[in-house]
Length: 100
Image (cartoon, rainbow, N blue to C red; front, side, top):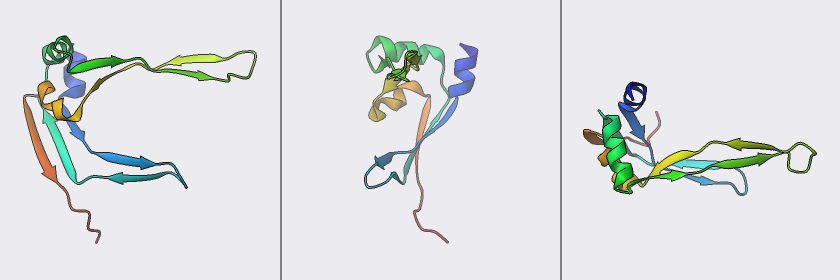
């Protein structure tokens, strides 16, 4: 639990969009959410309320070979509007898209 607290104590959430065609392009929003201070009990409470949910991630590589490999990378997900339930303090910062 201490590791989780330390790892997630400060987080920045940057909205983004991805377009794959005609080539990979990314666009980032200027409204950044900064989460400060959390504890594992806040995470457990969010799970118990259904705010945080489990997303099993399974990837199958080398499918057409005699030795396919299953890779698991399961994650927990949360909707952006519910992020504040994980932190003691949420701050919104707007950044400029102008370049010098």
